[in-house]
Length: 103
Image 1 (cartoon, rainbow, N blue to C red):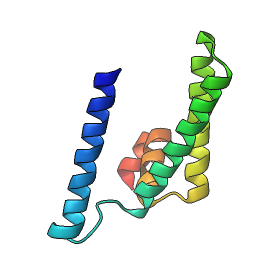
Image 2 (image 1 turned 180 degrees about the horizontal axis):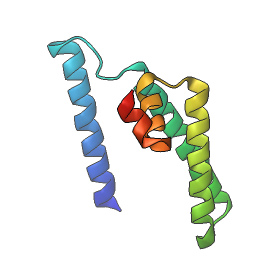
Image 3 (image 1 turned 60 degrees about the vertical axis):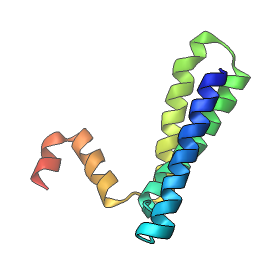
């Protein structure tokens, strides 16, 4: 567990340093767009809900229902925050693959 935490902290610190370097010294912009922030917020809310449910129901059988709830929460929060053109294209391609190619 210690090695996993050390690697996670290292990658997080390096990623943060690179973002700050690009923002401050290279381009002066953040590498995240508004839709990406929406995805990150939806993922954080979904992860928090899933983690909370796993703490409440500590049974092996609960993995699949919790995962299904996390997916529903992710899509629900994504819809509430707004869906960008790229996400619409991906959803269209999943629901009807030939429609995305025609657009």
